[in-house]
Length: 161
Image (cartoon, rainbow, N blue to C red; front, side, top):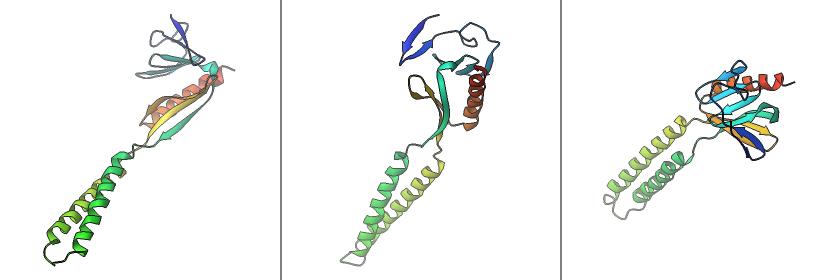
């Protein structure tokens, strides 16, 4: 077993399904990439000792807003241009098709922006505070998964005494 020092935190590489002693009997939670034992939190290749974890919490991570902001900005521009073409034309029939086109395009982009905003959902992250620092160690769109990990980690912290 190799041990390396990173950010004041002991991290080790070990076989999946075992704790630092090679024992799998004290496994509290496991899935594809995460394991919680009585003594360790293992996420992928990173391992955190439960003794060094002073607190943990689940945080909501806002979705990327640029997917909403770009269509909104262009929608505003095209709606504005459509109103200008319709309101400030010198000849009644000359700018109506262009104005209606811009209004239609602005309306479509507004519809797209609203739907993108409705469909964007937050992800959730597990943050732990260790002796070294607070860090986000895992994120998932599924809040139930994080609650299961949090519960197992709380049990491990309670077992350490």
